[in-house]
Length: 365
View 1 (cartoon, rainbow, N blue to C red):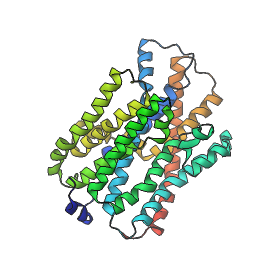
View 2 (tube, one colour):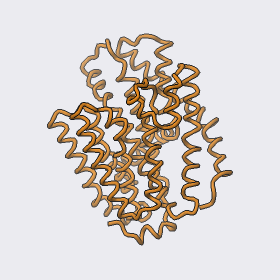
View 3 (tube, helix red, strand yellow):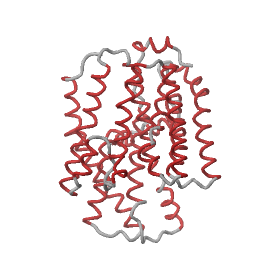
View 4 (cartoon, rainbow, N blue to C red):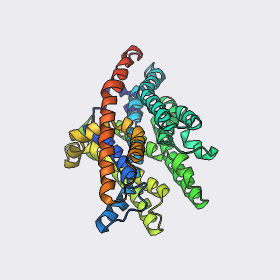
């Protein structure tokens, strides 16, 4: 049970920067890039045994999006919990989101229109964060903006829940959200409405991450490392157990290729990964994820996620045809290198200079 006295003493708490989580963000972005570059649009390529096995694995790397959701739910909820009594709670939160999300989004949309002539009928839903509903209206699905829309819709409501709700009730809301998403997704699949679970009912990853933040806040982890083992013992069986049961059911009923069921399995298992990194900061896995290359990918992950598909499309336009496995991997290598270069320039010349302007807008907590 979440103790109210912990929540009321939030001003003494701070979430320290966990470098391994930056690496997790970079790993998630890299997985999505690999999925699009090495799995999609590969018709006609003859794969050998080893290459075929690798290609099969790349097909599931889209779950990097779910890893993003869990991580985002944890990080944003952590910040909201610490600031929930601030007199400038809403003002600072939404200005921070605006500085982080909007400049990159507008830049990518502008380049999408300029280079690829993306129809305005799709750009408008992306601008207003309703791109996850475009399939309902029959609008062509262009770009990765559907997942960004899901996040921003969640964060339109979630700050008010954190600000006005007692922690024990927040926990109940999160549990209800996770159960509802699973049930709606299951019924949607039975009725052959699979995209309902992917594009609309897809907030359980955010809810799992938020639940982790709530339990970490309750246990003051990683504020007091003495409580880390207790948190791991209490919450790890829940995340691993729920994820394991769903995964076993998916395998038993031959649903393993289905995105909806894998999302249901992946969200609690990814939460267990984040929990492990928070409570075992000196473990080998935490040190690996805290490596400089992965952390740098984490720094550029937002732009990388939004723009990499356009880089791949531009490569295919300039270098048509990738009929062999070697040319497919060449495509991946070139597109990744170009994407990283572009995102690095964006980070240092565009995103960080704009981010420094926040100090003129934000109010003291």
